[in-house]
Every structure is written in structure tokens, then in C-alpha cells.
Length: 356
Image (cartoon, rainbow, N blue to C red; front, side, top):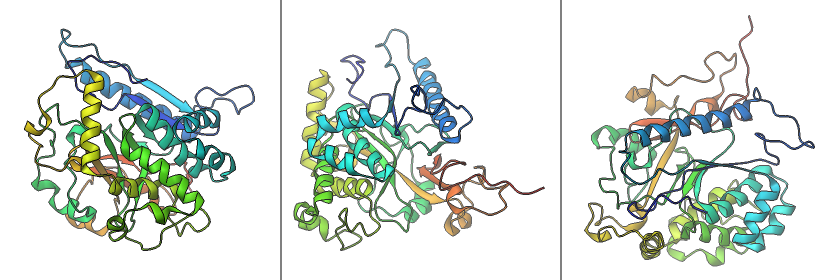
């Protein structure tokens, strides 16, 4: 359940840090490989937990003791068994998909959507490296048309603090893939429970496996997709089940659905804030108002270098004999870089030191 923080506070994305693997790296059973703090993925997960706990503690320290109690941090490390339980609760049709799926990252896609739908929280891939925790309230309202390079060129002209009222709540966040991509990179995804975009993505996932997704996507969404090919499990065309269905679900849900969801979220929480439409962001369509995005790009991208951005962010392959492009992909929002897309020791950024 979502941790309770009191009715004088509006609903927020729960402080739940979520990870998944076939077994629990942090607390393995006797049948699993033993705990290894030096393992790159385990060490990275521990760093993510440490950085976010430290950040939220620092935020709480700024709040007067006379206000409502602060929300506790929950860590959920999901095994295959935990994933199956969440999937069965969210959309039982996907249970057999999870059983039969051989790709670990695709199993994680199914698990991510189901568990976030049930519980909400912050989902991290095991290999996404935290540079600094992201405060979603600091991210700019997403533009009507997303262009990562345009965001780079104009970010210094904008005030990054884009949520002036606590009633302008953020209910969903993820990462837009690098400029050459055309779907969400969901290595980081955060959401409040029972979000309509997650419910829609679960429906689309089943259709993806069934090969009937084209029948469900609204025509106006199809017309604006980057690719006219509608993928399926037997013909993915380079568009994995999770990232593709999540982005299509985002574009398919309506502003009215988002507005109704937020109203119900506030009512369920017993929050008696001001009328939503009287708030500073009230003129912005609901889908954009209640969501925030990070954007993926390489630190070596020519536009990043031309603008002289983020020279203080270490290049993770600086001491590698062979340069690894993916080692230096990052997720930025506003004027700041928050995550490395892949940490050293992961499949996309293998450790390879220079020879003496």
C-alpha cells in the first residue's frame, strides 16, 4: 500500500524504490548465488538506495517538525515470484506471457508495469547509475512536441522550477530515448498507483503478444508514430514490448482521463486542496501538467559538445582502452544530468581498463 503521509499533503509518487531480477541480489536465498557487494549491479543498486535515502532525509530535515510526519522509504526488490504475483493482480492474461518469455529485459517490462500499477513508486533498472537523485518538481513541463535537441538548445532560457504549487502534482515520469530513438527509455519510471497510462500499457502488452495491437491503437495516435510498423512479439522490428507500449499508452490516454484520475487520487487521499483549475499550471493540458520527463543523450553528442555542456560529468570510459559509446549516455532534465543510462560493469558498458 502507498505509505500514508496525512490529508494536509496532496498525493505524491510513493517513496518506494523498485528493482527486479530473477532473484534478490540484496537478500539471496540459499539456492541463489551468495550476496556480493562487489558485483557491479549489486553495488549500483546499493548506491541508488543510499543516494535516494540521503536525498529524501535531507528534504525532510528542511521541514518543520510541527508538520505532518514524513513518508518512510520502502525498497522492493522483485524476484520472478514477486513479479508473477503483481502481474496476476494487474492483468492475469500476462501471466502466461511472463512464464514463456525468455528475454530477461522483456520479463522486467511486464513486471515493471504491473508492480507500478499496483503500488506506485520509482522503478530503476539495475544498471542505471544515479549521479544525483531527481526531484520531479524541478523538471520543466514537457512541450507539446518533444525534441531532445531543442530541449538542449533552450534549457538555459527556462526556469527549471516548473511546479509552483503543491497542487500541481506529478503522477508519472520516465525518460525519452536518445534523439535517434522513438520510444520511451523506461530504465527509470515513476508513477502513482493505478495510473491510467499503466493500465493502458498492460492492455497493449497483451495485444503486443497476441499480435492484435494495431486494432487497439487510436487512429490519431497511429498517424503520429515515428514508425508505421506496429510491432508484435513475433515481429518486434526493434521495438521492445515495454518501451513501445508505454509510449503508445501515454499518447492514447486522454487529458480527460488524466484529470479524472487526479481528482480521484486527491479524493481517495482525503486531500482538500484548492480547485485544480485555479492553480498556476491550470491552463496546461492535463497530460502534460501531471507528467515530467528526462531525456537521454550521449555526453559525446556533437550538440552537447558544441554547447559546452556538462563538462563536469565524468566520462565513465575515460580509462578504457576502447571507448564505449553507451558508457557515456546520460539522462538529463532542465539544466541538470541525473543518471548514467548504464553503469560500468553492465552489459552495455563492460569494464575494460587500459593496459599498463
